[in-house]
Image 1 (cartoon, rainbow, N blue to C red):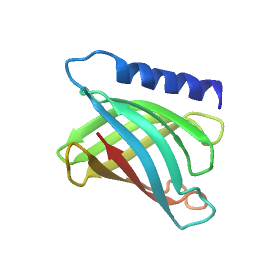
Image 2 (cartoon, rainbow, N blue to C red):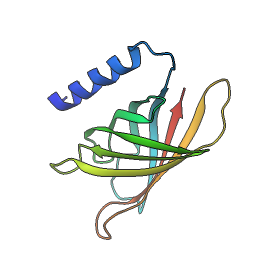
Image 3 (cartoon, rainbow, N blue to C red):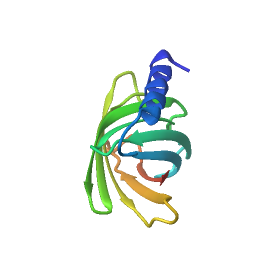
Length: 135
């Protein structure tokens, strides 16, 4: 695990344990579906934290079978969220991230969320549907 990934995971743990009058949201990255499906990794376990102001940070195993960390901000519009962030693990630089997602329902405080990540370049990458579970 890289130094940057360890630092990001430590920051997530500290944020999750920090005392607060409001709890924020802890989410788990679960799986993805890529289209067109090439040899992408669809098992994308990870964790993220979003505080009640919208600041978001997380880490996951990405589609290229590398570890990614990200930090940014999430705007909420009812069931629709839009997360903008910088993400590592793709190529050798921090890449911009723009992910719209919708929450499906809430049952006993647990909410499944589906995100759509469009393919940016025609010759590489894929469109992605991604499942997350929030508490």
